[in-house]
Length: 477
Image (cartoon, rainbow, N blue to C red; front, side):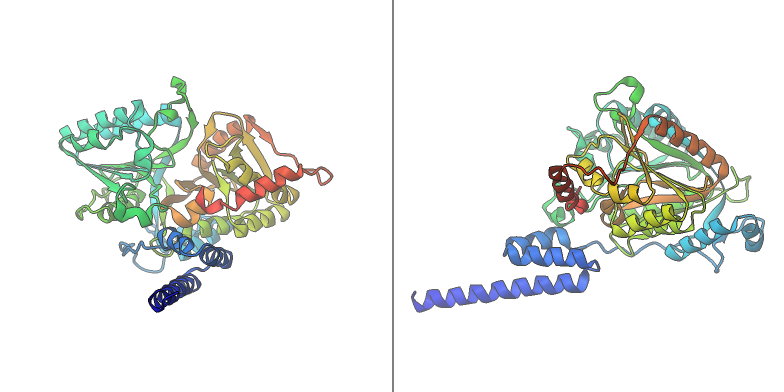
């Protein structure tokens, strides 16, 4: 080897060591989870260059947003309307008050009082009421969704949005960059060419600039009309949700119509996402103060995402499991939480709480069933009950504790929702709504098969190996 080649080889080797060292240092300093850190470091050193490139694209959280002010005043956890905080607290059973205080520490957003919520099952119930609400708008429509397909369902909403714009309402629609591409051609053209509709994409997935953000998705689903009423939950806009029309791939789901002061909190979440997507700052329409309140339900919104102190929804789930006295019912399409959640579920069941998890019998994501199944045996052994609902695929997301406390929204029980996605859940305390949701859960259980566990029966070795291997991909489903 001539001196020039040797010198070039030495410089390349030095640059390689420097790159690997810098990437390793970044992992050590920025990753909180030990197992994740070890995994990334192993990838970086065992697959030179390629491992570093993969980490630089997918492993670094580049999202930094300045959160909007929560606009809270004073130490009380409630937005007081006619009663002192002490009077309100006396009306709330101690375990729930304890949980609500914990939640306020997790996310210091006041509970708004005087709300009302109603559950809507599937697009057959929800879409006509959502579109009616949109078409009646006089001031403003704020709508964001992970998926907004260009199909029969999507066209229902486009028609309603056009009517709102004709009414003179300011219409803003925000769709996630990944979810937008679930249908071809996308709904973007139809929305952009409609006068009076402002349309934006959250982190466009096809832009080379946004390649480092491709693993981060805005999974929130929020519709707000005139600042007075909202639809909030986990239901996308897609033909599959119109179950009664017998679509090719039907999807069961649930969303909630919400009225009251808590709608203002939803508006601020939309406002922040709208600005982040590159649009101008605006002041959302506010719930009218001073008039009669729609209901009595205390509620608040908990946004979560990789842009700040993420993990708030996961912490709330942990807090609810620790405070539960009698029952915990969890409905989720995807169940791949980390070990801390699994332990909390086991501990709750072992101390006598009736813990039930309702999942689809067959997932719509390749490999998900095996990955979820890998955690079943340990949960069943500790007394957690698992039910698998028969088709159609159930996309509902519900946590109901002691037949009174509800935690609903866009988040699934998996690492993607707890750590990577932009999510949004609503915490509320309402026995009437809880009864309504409890009946919905009971119907799901009636269409389900309970998972069995017998310490004397072990699955075949091949299935254990396959399921546990699939579980290793947990953050990427």
